[in-house]
Amino acid sequence: MALAGGEAGAAQRDALVERDVVPDARGLADDDAHPVVDEQALAHVRRRVDLDAGERPRGARDGARQDRDPGAVQRVRDAMGQERVHAGPGGEDLDRADASRGGVACVGGGDVAADLSGDAGQGAKAEHGYTVDPSVALSALILHGWQGSGPEHWQTWLADRLRATGDHVRYPELPDCDEPCPDRWGAALRGELAALDPGAERVAVCHSLGCVLWLREARTLDPELRVDRCLLVAPPCPNAGVPELEGFFPTGADREAVDVAAGVTRLVCSDDDPQYCPGGAARHWVPPLGIEYDLLPGAGHINPDAGFGPWPEVEAWVRGDRDALGAVAQAEGAKNGVET
Image (tube, rainbow, N blue to C red):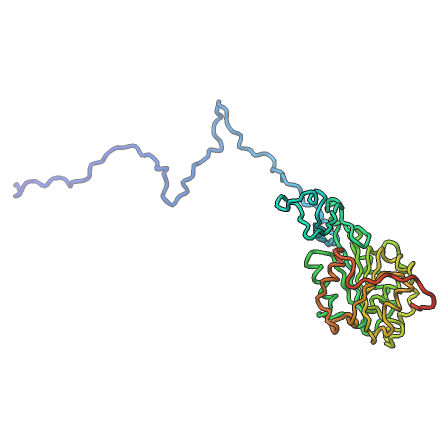
């Protein structure tokens, strides 16, 4: 008996597709995607690159050397000495009558002497007879007196002026300047002279007891300690009556002694220095030393109390630009009976 709706058929299923199964070697996104090198790859008949780096490479640089001892730092003075030009009319200038053409006009019939000393670069000979070479640097030693020289003193001013132009300056504070010892000051003097530049013009500038120190040591200075020029300003006398100075006298200095210590020695003093030289420094020192001197009237001890702070004349003398510092008096011959 047939049922309504027809005969039930078999259950419907998905069609089976017959395919080959291929493995998926692509991997997942999180897998390492770098190329795979087959370590057992077959030999290739073509040329290939040898990937074997061989031995470990050696360093190409050299090893560091041992540290080198730099040694002491050498002080360098100025590379160029001060140029000094002594201007003057030449003979060719005097031959031209017309000043508009570069000649020298002589007014009132005055005589003008031509300066025919030659090229300034070869050195200028000053009136004092020694030659100042502008290509040679300056090395100066400044020696103070009893109790030192303060900031207002002309010696301090001079040291600053010379240093400002690059000159070599020794301006020491001598030991125990309030209670000076001749032997200790003498040793300090030799040390300072040895420190001056041997290749420069060497100049010593002494004041007060520094002058007496110089005269006391002058005869015994070694030749290599000799200076070219020395200036003695306001030296005290043995009869000053200052106990701190008495140990420096007598000096035993004479003309031979000052010539041993310096090529040129000059004295500068006043006519009224009762505290340190009641009889006058010129009267006491010039006869036995036989040196030229400058007398400065009313200048006292030639220190700040006497108005000597900035002193352009002494700077000009140190630089070799002038011979005298005041009214020049002729040197007297040595006289007997004067104790120095």
